[in-house]
Image (cartoon, rainbow over all chains, first blue to last red; front, side, top):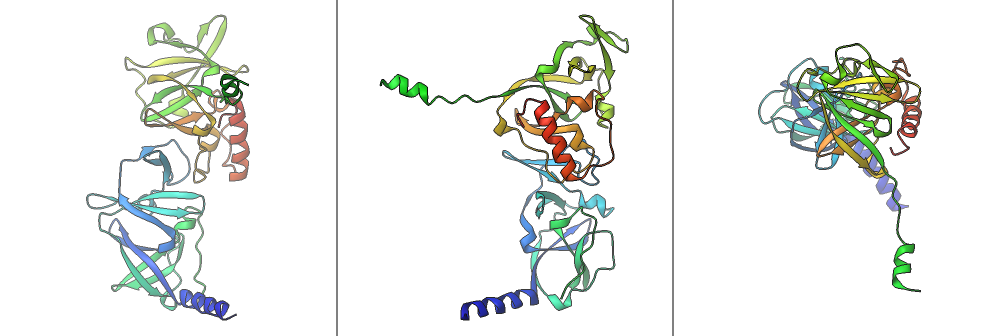
Length: 155
Length: 172
């Protein structure tokens, strides 16, 4: 009983704050929930794949594992910056997916859930946006990237 | 009774599927080998639109164009693969014939679900060959037996992939 209550309190505490990974693409600061991120590693050359799915036209090979690449930079109409570029591994509902991001090393940030506001931009699946270092940062819903819907914040 | 008999009884037979691996530009594509009827050089294929071999007419298939792949098909290594599904016959021009390989089912991988559109009709799966990612072509689509349809739902696509896998020997 007591344990259950603690669990509920823990759940509420989790809802009060979100841990996010802040990264950038084409100089645009973005964030993703830490649980949606599988890791960050150096970017390696992707393999083009004939495809008509928007922004999914390549794959990345790591050892004997292959994963699709989501071209988030193209979707945001920008170009990744810096060298060496980095690979953010997204935990997508359909399986792991690689995203090429700027060379700026991502950092962790804890944000108050009440500070997350609905995102005005409809160009990307997001949970909303938050202000980090005086910059408006969209929290990208990596799990649903490419499914063309925006999820409103439920506080 | 004997050790040999015991050893023989545990022998496992693994079925494999054979594929001809070809290159088109930067893409590597595998064709189920049982449909390959011949491989011709440019000189052998000639410059006619269709190729006639052993009494069968193989209509030209511009696979590079169908896949929207930029490929130089005029190089010394370019070949024309004569291919038949039994219903259709096509002469497929490729930049290079890379090799022939036998693949176990466990080494055939489905196309990731993030690929959601026509490409699910184009490819029955993928595999690694000589450290290269190779896409397993659906010959029925390549030879025009399947039209490019409107993007199928993933469920529909999975059924198509299952059908394709069956067509390529049930290996994927």
